[in-house]
Image (cartoon, rainbow, N blue to C red; front, top):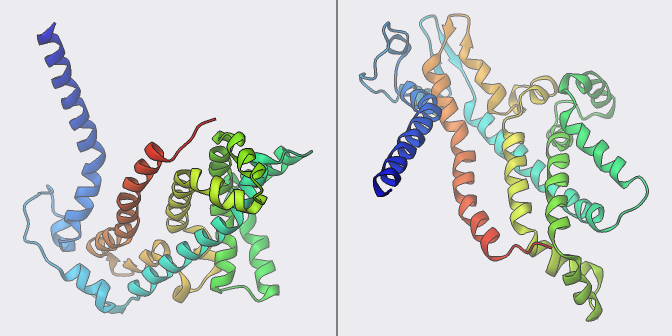
Length: 285
């Protein structure tokens, strides 16, 4: 029996290693591509052995992309800042609006509440192309076309439904008896919401905010159509590396590495606090 258990652990470790390698290899390959020239990347057969170069990252930082045909001005750092600003502002606004709304849907049932909640959720699954044309026309009439405010408003179609439904589930898992006991002690509903409901639902709010940030960061189609180059995020700015003289694979790989680093760092940083909150502060009804 002991040998069987040891063999099972070995097989499980091997299977887990294969799964990790399978899913992580594309990320590793992109990382290695960011230190190669186009000639090295496109050689046949491909090889893991090459002479690394920082030229791709230098081009992103300096804003000058050197191709075989000409030198092209790019503004990748501006696009990176746009992504940070749009994602942080959109998620902050969605949390400010969505968390109280989620609490209201979880605690105060009224006629049509489920229909309203489902309608808000349906915005998340609606194809972006379905709303782009009317949004473009409305934004032009309202003066919101090619503005940060307009993009942040549109990003609520991504962030708000996600936060609303995830946080609502966490509020529903909290026993209402805890809040009733706090209210009986003479505290207002707002104090109960702020001091009882919010701390207990903290892990859910953090998880919803993190997911909303990732979805907002990865958005492509809204910024492509509704914004000009100086307000577009990195997802759209990467199109600058597809030039008439060819596709700059090395710069694209370097841009991918630089663009996923903030979200990866945020996920790794928040993971510890999420686990800690779930294990110490969560209460299930």
